[in-house]
Image 1 (cartoon, helix red, strand yellow):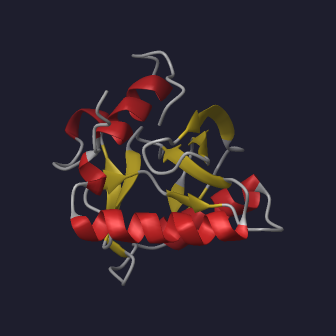
Image 2: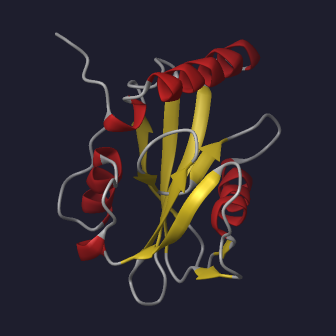
Length: 163
């Protein structure tokens, strides 16, 4: 059985950077753990980001560092990637095994409602673009994994266990 390469890892640079990060984290940690969130504003739009180092539009998130709780990591990533503040407490939706990136990688996926943006997210070395989008008008290049997670969180599909 051939392992399908997700579009967000289709470039050599993205694969190399992803592999390097996972090797680094594997040496620092026994298992890598990440957080990601579907962040909805009062209009029901979801917040997405486009990174400089990997193609496609994604929901905000990142790795949980040593000494950091998953909630601390989530709130930090939402601030860093989108200048976002949550209205209601984030709700853990599902835990996924991200076997396409690394065999020891897991993602805690949250739903955040009532999200506001303190000020627009300007382009920098990590985030190229960011914004809120209607679910029926997602930007071109939204990754298949992002689309699957949004369908799951909206109840249009049952949650899978693999990211």
